[in-house]
Length: 221
Image 1 (cartoon, rainbow, N blue to C red):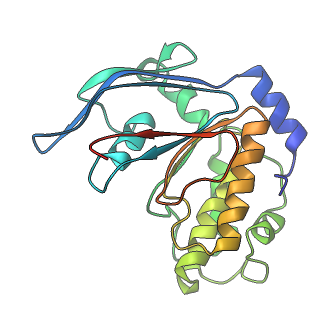
Image 2 (cartoon, one colour):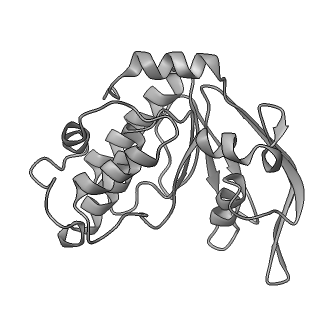
């Protein structure tokens, strides 16, 4: 599946190449070391799947990579700059979808996407009804989101990927509550994103079926 306005997105990525470097990252929660001396890098066109047993710190790692929480030790560089020094521009460069959907239950899917588009640092000019159609929600644009199934609500959250030009995607269990068809749709999006020069980091119990994906195991596998 092609994400709309592909050419505009490609041009944006070419002007601001993805480059994420993690050095000596450590995370301690409740006096327990989740991971220590973690080092890796991610470049344009790459997809990284974080793997590990439950409780190994996968979600904690993603939140640290987003700059939402601080590591116990270590530094994260975005285009050779410490993300703590460039928070605004770094956050403008990423789209984060957490384990929770991050949508307003009282709003409609269309209203949720309109809010996301209005807040995006680099919004894509796209018909929002069309974006919802791409995630299989044709006919559900104007119903309260709380009335949708868990899988449909997850699709509303993932539709946020269609309304922003952010080159870095950070996704926590994006396939939760999705059927096989929807999982393949998201894999196609990830593949297209990488081919345009974007990059993504995600956690999932499902092995990502994309040619540019590689994995990193944290904690005790």
